[in-house]
Amino acid sequence: MDRRLGALAAALLAFTSTSALAQQVYKVGSSVGLTGYAAVNDRAWRDGLQLAAEAINAKGGVLGRKIELVVEDNRSEPQEAVVGYRKMMSNDQVQIFDSGCVSAGNFAAAGSVVRAQIPMMLCSILPQRPEEQKWAFSVLPPPRFEIEARYQHLKDKTDIRKVGILHDPTPYAMLMKDLGSKIAKDMGLEVVAVESYKQDDADVSVQIGRMNAAGAGAIVKMGQGGSTVTTAKNIKALGLDKMILMASLDDWATFRQAGEVLGERFLFVAPGVQIPDAIPAGSAKEAAESFLKVWRAKHGDRDPNAGARAWDSLMLIAAAAEKAKSLEGPAMRDALETLPSTQGAFAQFNFSPEQHVGITKNPFEIGVLRDGKFVALK
Image 1 (tube, rainbow, N blue to C red):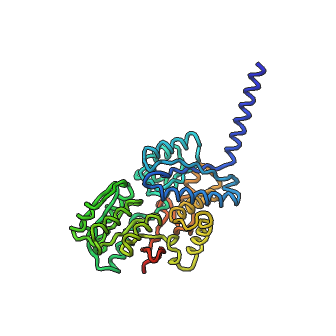
Image 2 (tube, rainbow, N blue to C red):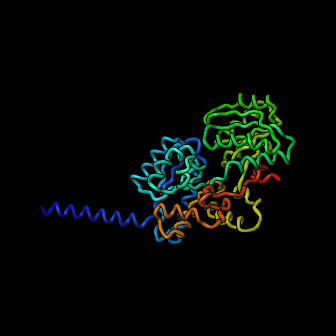
Image 3 (cartoon, one colour):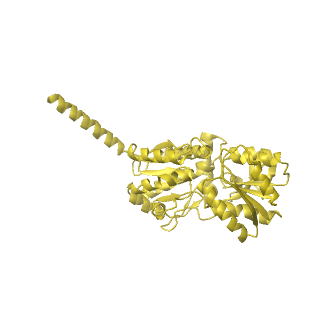
């Protein structure tokens, strides 16, 4: 009997010690595509979170607790994302999510996350259901900003008035595809062809050929990853020496390969952190340079785009915790809605009860690879 009591006491002591340790950290879960089509961007997202966590923890953490990141690879697949989210909620007991750019995965898991009343900060667009949007916050610029920046360049700087849209099946690209046709009309452009592809397609020559036959002078691509390089190579192989390829927000690794194929006929949308020389003096430049100093010290000349938004997202979470004076889900959700306007490394963020997409001013310039360097195309 005494042995049983001793074993029980030891077990209770171990449980108490574990519980006490758990209370000393603030667990932030992140579902990211460390493999699959989103890997380049989501690896940078994870690394930006880690740098932000280190910076916040060096100053004492949030409300006296150190941030502990819990990362699950969703392999860029919705089903894997659901499994990872459930694990982080049940096994790891995360208190908030700060997840990567796989929109479909974030959508698939949103229902169970909301039922647990856990806020979600996302690299992706918001889930579609209003009850899920209530608990989700996005640091991705609205898709229309990407489209408007590209169309404005065509309208102001070229004589191209007919474009083709090339998109993948992700929710983000599908949303941009629909917006692209509408916004074109408003800006005096004509979408003459809309073509789709899968992320692992090794050739999109047929789609490009149909757009060219329809009279498109530029391809407005909606989707990230290596498919952009495939598109650039196919344009060159088809001998379309006047066609312009305009890419979505993506990583330098992708931009460099496509730019080396098409030269200055390859254009892309870029935030200030990707082309910092284009940022005017002021608070935006100071915030970007502060982040870039930390990023470059750890990652050298690696692309800072996704890392900067991840850094900003965790800084916003830390600011919400200080505002709420609580780490409980509902209190954090309410605090995120009522944060004051905040200048981040990537952009200015303005959340409100009605506005859960934090970037409300277009942060994009049109970039180009020139003499081996990424610069704003003026």
